[in-house]
Image 1: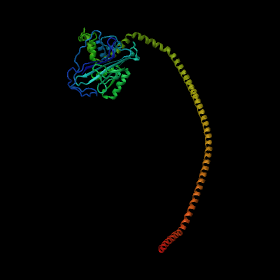
Image 2 (image 1 turned 30 degrees about the vertical axis):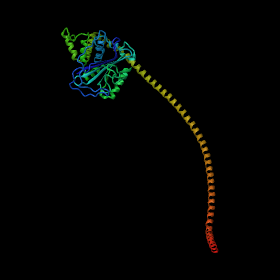
Image 3 (image 1 turned 180 degrees about the vertical axis):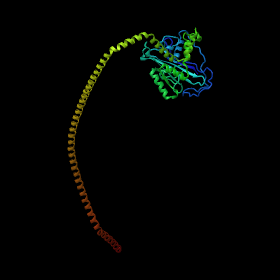
Image 4 (image 1 turned 90 degrees about the horizontal axis):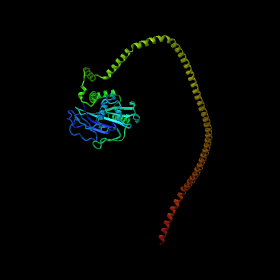
Length: 433
């Protein structure tokens, strides 16, 4: 079982009772949760002190007449009981559409807390006018419902209702939504991206009333209880007015509505009503049948002639279609062949130009080869002449060296004789002295 923990209303409500960004907080004042489930706090969230507590078991909202009490209840009931026929207070079917301006993308989000585990789930509704223009056509009024389990990545405080949403409100009671309001598509995309990034959020989006009611039942939120509340508050009376029946059949109807799915009974009622209408028109239908049976014989030949004409027309149409297809194919083939002939002509021209260019290149290459051969031969001749001169110089040096080596022995003998002469002269001079 769940209890209502918080309510957030954003950019919705009539002109005299608008909710720009309002949060009704009922948390932390009830009894302790008997079996709290482990939860992971957000990065910037303060550490919890003590075990979690249930929401307030009751509350009183003091507002003067026209202050918006009925508007608040209508908006809350529009989340849990989708559909204009379930509007609280028995108002006209367009009362919810009056709560939305042309540029609005209204949000109503309810946070529910489980009484045993303390786990929370957020269910909400988003609505806007298609084309950003107020219209009397209900098909231009777009509505959708969503649910997720708040945790790291997405909570009721940082719903992506605006392009810039703070992780936490800077001041308690202040709005964390800043910047331009998101459209319904932008809100859905942001919600889907959050669900992909954080699988534990279990994001669900729905646009069909019956499927949304089934999803609420899967979450553990019984819309039938809100249906009783709607009936009890139809004229803002007491709960006893729900059971103020005048006869037994009224109580039986109330009991059957409580335990029976109205969708099945509505289908049965439509089926029985259809059979009743057919039985009431029995004489008219029989006369129509007799007239039809008499007309069939008279119209048979017309039908046969029409069928023969249709067959002939089909044959003619098929022949004409085949002829036109053949003409189109021949025309297309002729165009393709002309294009191909032009392409081939261009290729022939390009090939002739390439041949001419190749011949010119070949002549130029021959000239370049001849010039290179001449220069190579000239360089080879110059190198050979230089090599011959070097060899001649080397031969002259070798001959000179050979002559020098031949004269070396005579020079040595001359030097030895000169040394002996010098010693003898010295000895003679020493002797003379």
